[in-house]
Image 1 (tube, rainbow, N blue to C red):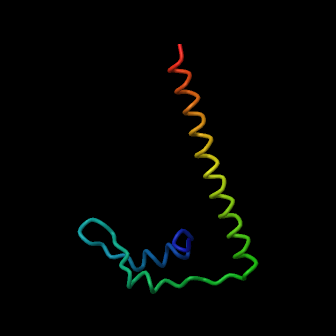
Image 2: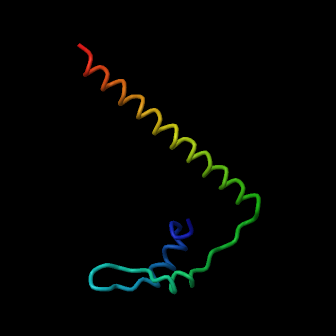
Length: 78
């Protein structure tokens, strides 16, 4: 998640090596990235949001599958 933030991305870009035409972030360089610590309450809030996102993602997949089944049934019935 840290690499998705401006601070994390900046640190990652500082450590990226361009090999041929593909950029690589080597494991030893990745270990140099500083991860900011946030207070425990904020960590819990973020964790709860992430849990909810995964729950909604699973529900989305379920609903899409149901919709696809309904459409397939419509096309297969006379």
